[in-house]
Length: 360
Image 1 (cartoon, rainbow, N blue to C red):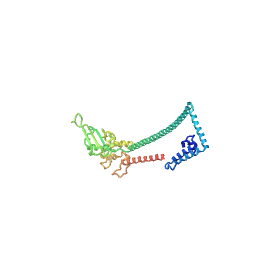
Image 2 (cartoon, rainbow, N blue to C red):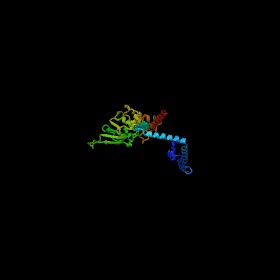
Image 3 (cartoon, one colour):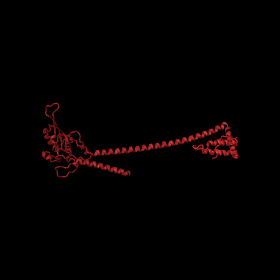
Image 4 (cartoon, one colour):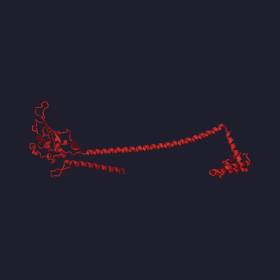
């Protein structure tokens, strides 16, 4: 420890610069009794203070060292007094320089803090932009996936055949009783339509409407609802509406619902609907009804409750006959639908596999 520089021995012993050696010894004894370690066992600084007190005591009792100390103290005091004598202008200059230095340090710290804050804000903006890009990418992928699914569903809906309504096999007949006076009974109507296929004679509805202004007079027009066993027979009858060679001269045949059944629209769209059966040659127009029943349109299944099978006018989807030994030329309606659905599912799986391989 450099006592001459850091500690003033006079202040440590509480004596004046002009004090004698006897006064110094007396002051040392008094101070040493107060700071002695044996009297202050619980004070950790007691030993250090007692050591400093001994050094100050030895320094002041050494004349040469005391003279050097006195010179240093006088020099220090002179310097302090000289500083006090500085004029106000110099003091203000020093204070201004110190103030500028403080302001410079403060501005530098503020600038560093601002740069750090700006860096954090930039990183936050970058992070937000990255999140927005990722969110937009997810939304885009989701929209593309939804479009793809919608396209697949639309394709599946397009490939899926609509269900057959019970009225899809029923046709409506309109005719003039003056031209066809024989068509006044259900049996006669069934006989005429039998040339196209098997009908449900028990379900035929016949209506003979008299004139509105003369209800009591005989009917002029007849209307009949004829259900066929097969929709293909009904389609052939509608296609032959009003044709003399088919025995429908003056008889208007249309669909009971006023529009073509959805199953026929779907078959046309898929290119599965065949052409209507060929007309009966003129030389056979006078043949009996027994000869007409030998036409392909009159050959139907023995299941009288089935209205969803198709005749030969639908060559791609003919159901296998229960009574005929000849093999069928096509597949049934249910098998075609299942085949289309399996094909669509297979194409979808192949497309997903190709997309995954492209991403990898």
